[in-house]
Length: 130
Image 1 (cartoon, helix red, strand yellow):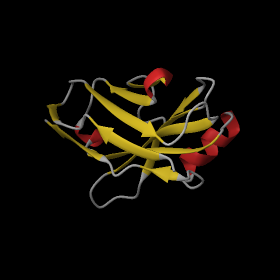
Image 2 (cartoon, helix red, strand yellow):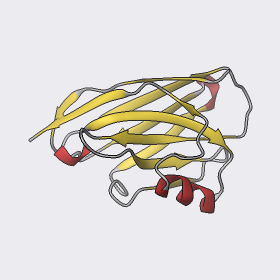
Image 3 (cartoon, one colour):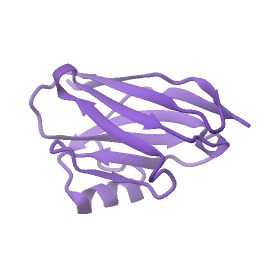
Image 4 (cartoon, one colour):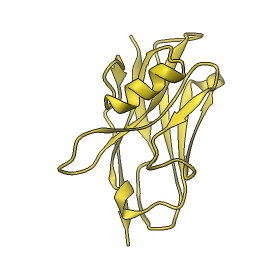
């Protein structure tokens, strides 16, 4: 069974940077689509970005140009590099995995706030102060 464990959440000041990691287990060589979602207090979950197994990525407009998703397949780890963070980025960040996703599917999954992703981590908390 696929398991995802996030780490790296922290409290940082606006304008700073942070790297989140998602370590996966229970799969190898799978064509999984993986990505990041977040949920701020009192708000609905929203998509941050997705990466397909071939490295293709799609990002939400709110983070485009500031956040970058990368992966290290050797250690089954997905990363989210967050730069120039703002207080609006404060949220619980979740890693998720699902079936392979082309560009169209990535946009759909982000828009549907993660519907279609099969596996979820428990989250890591990011708090940005002004």
